[in-house]
Image (cartoon, rainbow, N blue to C red; front, side):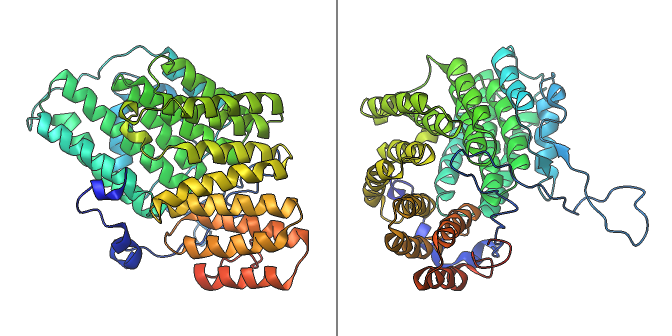
Length: 442
């Protein structure tokens, strides 16, 4: 669906006037904040403390740091009778997102298992306020749909702020509104999507533990909405993050949980995207046969997609995403030459969207560039890098900076050239001082 289907939505205007949203550039340290996934994708991210919440009994004159808890802190409480309401309220009242440490292995899998095993029940909310009727709920659903598309051209800081604002109103209506069970469930689905988008925003910024925390809350809200497919999509988001910046074996587990929890409710596009994500996760975990099987399944499923059956939150998914994942699975598995045609096909499909999704275009261009480096064509990789930098100026995104940093680092590892130096200068001039030649990125 194009942006023309959403009156009043002007992505070009946002690109021309980034200052209208109060954005400032916040260059991401691609080495220390994001890690550099190698061919197997096993490198862990580095976690730093922030200082926005002081610790008590801190000696005078000493640095004040926040004590950062794991993302699954209080998981059992989240799944109690009124635990979701408490967490949603806390999330909307925090002026800045609290930082959390990412979790992995059994700690991450247990969160998905809670979703699978929990019984459906609605929290006991006593209606005392505004009548929540169908037009009002439809209005919130439409606003969430518009925000999903805004996320294509806005960076994480803006998406988080917008998600939090919308979520605060939704939570208030859930707490004090007068609504039917059906309208309450739909509001919980709205809350789940807003929390998922907030998590995605933190993922874009590079705060991976905070992203997980948002997604755990979103997963609980999706369960309260009795929306298994929505929950499966949240697990898919969690899996994407750990595929690239965690342990890919965890991603395989999460994606299998997603399939198990909503197997008979998933549309063809949802099943295709999960299969494509499994292909990348299996490849990075070292299982090339499983990766090939999932790639074949994803291509089969994408040909069966009927747009009318696809849920609104999958508006972005199409053949380009299957082609990109197929290329990434081959690249991660050590077959860069075989990956190139898939990346090129993804870019060809993306061309139909013009400049609506700059983040995707940067990712596709840079991964194609890395595949070319590994096949010995560094000159083409440099040319692709310049295209990616020009596209990255359209969006204030940590993801795009990390993608470009990885491409530049691979070029430098392949042997410094004048062409590489020119690309690094282009990055610095276009995206700010955190270009790949700075000490933090080299």
